[in-house]
Every structure is written in C-alpha cells, then in structure tokens.
Length: 484
Image 1 (cartoon, one colour):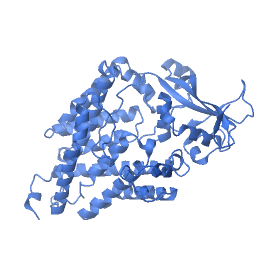
Image 2 (image 1 turned 90 degrees about the vertical axis):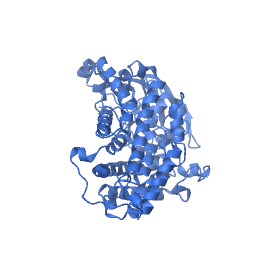
Image 3 (image 1 turned 180 degrees about the vertical axis):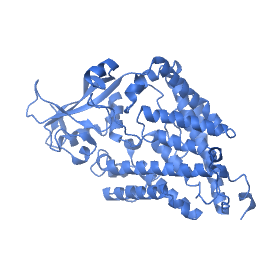
Image 4 (image 1 turned 120 degrees about the horizontal axis):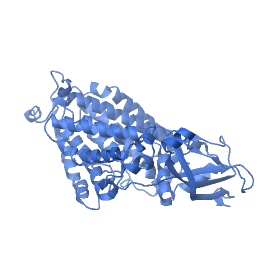
C-alpha cells in the first residue's frame, strides 16, 4: 500500500453520502434508458425496423462504431442486451455494488456503460441526441467512484464537476451566440409553446406574463454562464451553486419533456454537495483505496484532461457546435441546446383512409402518437424521463423534410401495411391493426389556446393545415408507397 493513497488529498469523504445518492440516481437513469431501448428498438432499429441495424453494420467498421453488435446481431440478442442492462441497473439501484470489493464494483459499473455504448453506436439517427452522450460520459466517470466502504476519490468528483461545467456553460454560450432572442430576453415568449415535446404544465408556463418570461431568461443566463464557475469554489459555495443548478433543472422538468437530460444534470449536481453540510456524515472508518485503484483513477483523470482539448477549443470558437462527440466512445463531449429558438410550431399529422377512392368527401382518420401534439383537446402528457424517439424525430421533421429522408418512406410503407411494431409506438391506431388503403401526412400550424379559448372550448391547441409532407399514396405492386 502506498502512503500517498492514504493521504487527505486523494479522498474527500465529506462527499460520501453525495456519492451514494449520485450512484442511485444514475442507476435509475440507466434503467430508464434500457427500458426505452427494449420497448422501441424493433420498430426503429430491428431487422424489420425503419433503419435496420444489420444494414447499418454492413457499411460501418468496428473502429467507427465499436459495439457488441459488430460481433453479432439479431433482435433476440438486442433484447438480451437490453434486459441485461435493466437487470444490472436494478442491481446498482439497490446497492449491490457497495457489497463488492473495489475491482468487482468497478466491473459492475462498467457493464451498463459497455452495453449502452453498444446500443448508441448502432442507434443511428434515433440515438443522435445529446443526452445519449451525456449518459455515456457520466456513466464512464462513475465507474471509478468506488463502493461505499472505500474513501471517495476526489479526482473523480472533479471530473464530474468538469462535466457539469461543460454541460451548463456550453449551453449558456450556445444560446448567447446563437439567437438574439436569448440576448434581448424574449426567448421564453416562444419556447414553452414551440419546444419539441410540451408537458402538462407547458400551457401555463407559456401564459406567464412577459416580465416573468424575461426573468426566466435572466435566471437561465446566470445559472449557465456564472454559477458553473462557483462549482469549483470552496464549500459551502459549491453546494449552493449545485443547489441553484438543481432548482433550475427542476424548473425545466416541470415546463417540458427533455428525456433524462435534466435528471442527469440534477444527478451531476448532487455530486458537488458536501454531505456534512446537510448532516450526512460518513462512517467513522472507510477503507484506504488499493494502490492499483489509485493508479487507475490517475490514468482516467489524465485521459479526460487530454481529451478536454477538443471541447475547450469548441467553447472558445465563435462558431460553436453543440451536442457533439469527438470520439467513438462518447468521452469528454461538447453539449448545448436551443441555440436557435423556434418562433412558430408545426406538427406532422399522419392520416389514413380505408375508402376505395379519394375525393372531396373522403373521411380521413388520424394516427395519434404518444407524446407529440396531435388532438387539440388532448392535454400534453408527462413523458420524461422516458424518451419517445419517433415523436422527437417527427418534431425535427416538421422543421425540415431532410430529417426524414432515410426513414420517412419506410414509415409510410409500414402504416400502409398495418405493421404491428409501428402500432406499438402509437397512442391510437384508427384502423386497429388493419391496413388502410391510403395514407398521407399533412403539416399543421399549432399554437396554444388563449385562456379565453381554453375556457370556452376546452382545447389546449388551435391548429390549421398549412401544407403537405407526404402526398396521398397507396401501396404499390412492389410494396413501396405510390403517390396518387
């Protein structure tokens, strides 16, 4: 045993309780992520999905997308990986890792990271969201926190703070650089209404008075551009800064659905809280870390420092990119969101009919999705931390047809055939599994109702058709959609 590992510099045991809470919260996020993968992969990525993994792998070498599925793919194997991830996440959530020796604890925490990395690297456009990389980077660092019976490695805590800093500060910079609405404090006049997937309270947030929206933007700038520096200050300042992050991220949880992004930010902020300040003292005796463990922590810290060159360079550039991974392992990424605020809301609405001919009086029936706005009388649902991948991609499709170039024709084909896998992603199939004769997709302009309109009609949205995304089509002899 080397004496330098038993010194005060290597451990920060006042964060013992924060480590436990952080690990449980991260395990819960892992659990949600693997459940999402299990429930949706067959329709999106399976052998008969919208963008099948086997086709992706045929043109993608291991070095570009390291994954267990490079060795073998089948839908059963993907399900087995997801179920394994669920089982491991549950074991971590209930604290099994804390009962193990250090080496076994690290291996157990490494397992969900390897499994989820394997999924993300073959997930294509469905896994292109920033919170996928955030989960992988957080999960990688968490591997080295160690079990509850050892001291808390201070270097790993610093790595978590560095990640939280980049997440918050990068998001703040991209807003200031990207859209004047953030600079003139008007961004929140639009955001609650036009965000990808509004939640149950978004209507109420949208109707806050203008001064409150400006206050929200000011609070956002303070939290993302100033508070992150305080995370590195001595206690109790760092704990107060973490508390500010937790409160503002909680505000985002209430105002919209952003998958597990906000929950992960809260999880990272917990790691900055000195547990002794809230009366959570560590055990009297904690084991001194093994020599090899200290060496591993130093090696990981060095790796993160080296890889930090690329995100730091990106932060300093005027043309900053957001939500980008600089390596295939999604380590030390750059983050950011809503560099541009959408002023108007549009939705892609799919409709079908089983009538033999198309005419002026054709009755079209609407497909309803689980999360995205559709029926104006349906209250926006609470989805987060769950992630509805198709619903999110349909929001991007409403902004530009280029987002659906690869998968949209396949989706239309599967609607025309009454595909059961796609039906499971829907809230309501108007044809109850049978195949319609014709399908189309129209673009609608949506806006929240005013308080007076809501009181009179009970509707949450007002909508009007503004164009076509997919022309009316039927299934051709070759099994592909044919416009009529």
